Image (tube, rainbow, N blue to C red; front, top):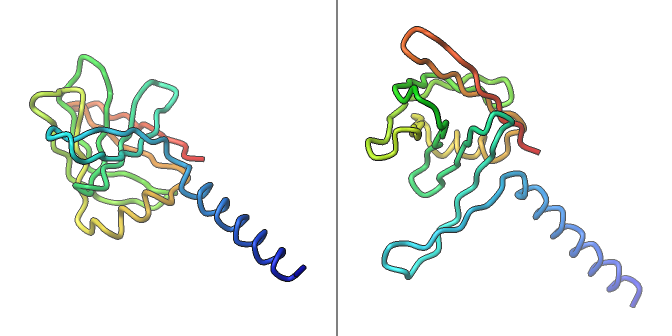
Length: 136
């Protein structure tokens, strides 16, 4: 009987540990336009009010920075210190948003989901800036 109790407690604790491992990103839920499906997006906001959204459906990141300089290019991100070359694509209807696409989507998506720190290197014409996101 005691063995069964230990087993149940171990399973419950493992379940809580797995949930906390995936609770690093904040969640945002959205209903599709047809109203049938609920989509879950993961995001982080930094101290400067910038937002990084992990879109697991299209397998990309979305960098959101509300500012006057909408023409931005992102060619590099660092995930836990490891540099990853990316391609940026601005949204035409939402100029404060920039999609970040990577070559090996599944591998990079897994790294992003497990990351502790993500640095986004943003270029505005000739000026460069770095945005950092801590994921706990």
